[in-house]
Length: 245
Image (cartoon, rainbow, N blue to C red; front, side, top):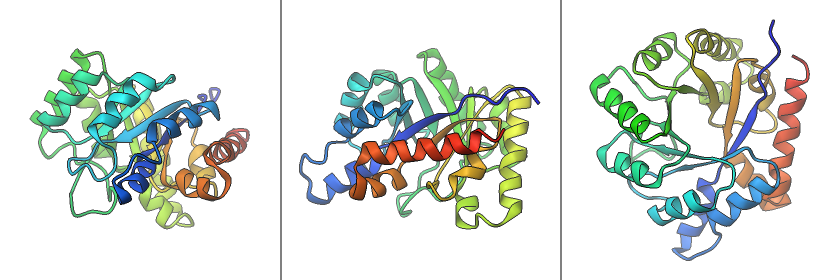
């Protein structure tokens, strides 16, 4: 087996903004959180600009695009409004995600086969703007293959099903098989959703996965130990799993 790919940790700072929006005030500031995460060793910052603006706001994206010293991964729905924002702010990467306003959090992967013309337009416009593209998909061979056909640079495997039942070997196997298939097709493979220090190990140990996007558990843990310590704890857990490869 070839040497394992060095694995990156991107921190999603959405829920810092969730706390701020509870009072509609100016603190805590997600941009300040992003800079602290970078100081603690985060390899990138992720933010999801939702259509209902429930946490991250447009001005946050503008400020993050200017302030982030590593790279900014903007999560967004595949809509013309969001495409225009991405083209203006030029994040390093856009991850296209499903979005339903009634959901509390993203409940599953994007069905990239539902409207392939729209998906292809999104990828083409983002690529023309010099932005890497990724699809947030369920660990399913059909979605992996369709993502490649649509021209995506990367896929992010939705780990929610695994996190809800980490003892279920079939859910981990699905992630392993999808990661291997993605790499074989020439896609970069990322993963995220619901990962914590307690359950990240088996996912971090999948050799093809080169990037993890983790947010809620980092922000939750930071209430007790601070966001820098929470980032470092996650890095330790990831590296321990990776050391066994």
